[in-house]
Amino acid sequence: MAWELRQAGIDCVVMNAPFMHRSSDVAGGLFNPLMFRKLRLSRMVGDLWPVMQSTYAAIEQSYNIKLLHDKLSVKLLSDSELSEWEQGQKKITAPYIHAIEKGMVVKGLKKTPALGYISSSGHLDIAGWLKVSQRDLAEKGRFFEQALLYEDLVISRDRIVVGKLLEARKIIFCEGAAAINNPWFQGDWLTPNKGELLEIRAHDLEEKHILRDDVFILPLGNQRFKVGATYSHDAINTQPTKEARNELIRKLERMISVSYEIVAHYAGVRPAIKDRMPVIGAYADRNNTFIFNGLGSRGVVWAPYCAKVLVKSLLFNNEPIPEILNIRRFSRWPY
Ligand SMILES: Cc1cc2nc3c(=O)[nH]c(=O)nc-3n(C[C@H](O)[C@H](O)[C@H](O)COP(=O)(O)OP(=O)(O)OC[C@H]3O[C@@H](n4cnc5c(N)ncnc54)[C@H](O)[C@@H]3O)c2cc1C
Image (cartoon, rainbow, N blue to C red):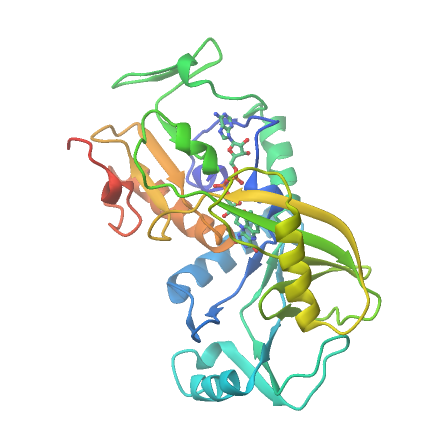
């Protein structure tokens, strides 16, 4: 959001609570254009992918770093999935099915009837991006590593005051799952979703591709991999659990045939929304109080797109935000 604001020439200050949970620190950072349960395109691929590619390319160029890593994903296909994927090669999913290979074995994976190679997939180095972005903002005096306390915040029609710290013309709440406590954007739209991941070391496992079946296996280099993720609406907290660990182990061992060791176990909370679409837009009729949230399990692809839509709305005098993204779809506020 901050990148997009600055690209548009809008000065902004970021307040970030250092010890609060950040889903972005846990995320696998994957992007994948296909959904597997029933083979279909991920929502709005045609709109989201070009914006994702061009935004991260611009960021990479600006900071001279590599963040977005295109990598083929390999889905292990059962017999029934194989025929579905062969059909998929003749449908709108076709551009994303790079190849289907029968009877091939990938190093370290159990043998399956076929493998489906997915293009336009990969992963973003989220940690790398946040580090660079924060450092840059801090050098410009635009990053405050402290919590925004709601009681310090005074929002009037023409200005925003944060205690003695700062004054601004507008505020955008980008709080992830913590938005559940936001006194302005109240409602039952946020349905936080807990997710857990393992980091493993495996010496004899393929590192060239992202491997996918019931879980993803993302190569990190040096024979390390992230394995994830779980989804749960119970006990929303950031504590890793034995149940999730066992679930991940069970699913991992259905995929791989080699030995491994677990080196880390992470848990996080996704800012998920009832209808699985992001929420952006203004609070009631205020054109100075905004939200940017609901990136769910797809922050990598949604963030650049939503940030662009919101900035456009700020710049061009409340240019309408599409209803499917607009927080208004959940609000009972007066307009
Ligand atoms: C296990 C797991 C795996 C995932 N894998 C993927 C994946 O592979 N691909 C993908 O695209 N997405 C993935 N996600 C989802 C992704 O993490 C989220 O979509 C994205 O990170 C959400 O970003 P966010 O900035 O909205 O929220 P967060 O990353 O949670 O950040 C919220 C920020 O707001 C700050 N904050 C909150 N309240 C305040 C306050 N009052 N004052 C100051 N600061 C405040 C917090 O400190 C935090 O820094 C995964 C999530 C999980 C849990």
